[in-house]
Image (cartoon, rainbow, N blue to C red; front, side):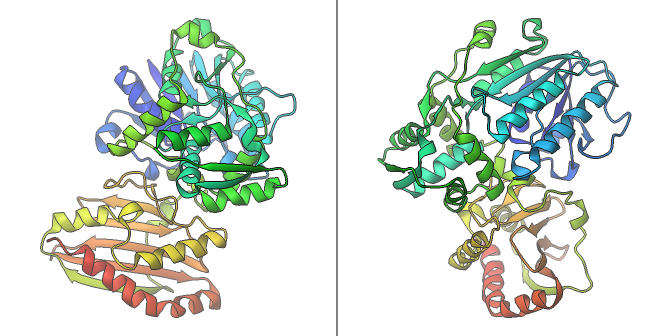
Length: 475
């Protein structure tokens, strides 16, 4: 079948894509920016990629007419704390309009479980999107999931951060709310299982794992599965705002996502029925098994996607293509050059930069800078990186965003997402004479930007000098 995959570069989309290809489907990936679609060249050769932003003005003829199935995986919860629901409704309306131009037979939408009459803004928005999609001229299948557990998922990474960093926690009372976690592997099985299945047409189904747990029990079970014990004390006085800041500073989540997560965590999210599980004959994995599978992927360096690579994990929810051309005028630079003996080894070092591997010199200074950025509302260093030795355009890399990663051209270009009085780029490039050029470029914003740059020149002297020296060490 010919399948349209919207949100193809999101966490779920990146997990779903290889499964659809393995099943022999022809896939059209709809993304807002081709430059940050983090798939390898071999996979790119097997799919059709179109650029399409459902919030922007309607563009007739953007989607091939002869599609059979479409996945609607567009969410905006992390992009705003105020108007994300309006954006989600706007996107759904636009999607229906695009689908009206095609021969699509079925649309599959991944939503959230709705139990309470009084819903959080996030869950209310998801339900509203369902109602909008039901107005489309196609058969709609809605899958409603709760907490999704998998390597790289926002829920899993938040639980991991909390447990690994805080053996003793003073937590808000929402940790006693019940939820029904589901393994990402099972979510993918449900998403692929409903393809062309007429029993699932024009209906909404809850999907969940076999365990109904409180968030507190999930934290305890995570710690037990990792071989340590944690202590959790619940207090009733922590306001939603304080809870959001608590998540923001302790975990790698963005503040916008933290606010919306806290709002949703107060609502019980438990599957009402298991009809779809019976229709498809799927036996789901337990929460404990989901954790074990996630760490198996992590330990084997097989994490396919991470929520952190989404643009909404950073500060710039916009097309980054305009930043690929590093400005030459009105900028301040730190330029380092060093002769390279073993090009491949040096490139490998560059491609491993950041995350657990660090920045090759003065890592404690980088951590301080990340902490200061976090305190000032930035992304900090906690995002790390998805792969230990692979980098794709669009990936998050600590407080940088990858603009270009081309090993054949021997060039890596990063753009700063930290809070700055200006804009910053960091580039690594090996020329034809085997010289490594390491260039930090800063375009200051007014006097404040220039004062900032000159105040950190002494630190740059040691940090950037030590970094290029250690990157070029290959023995």
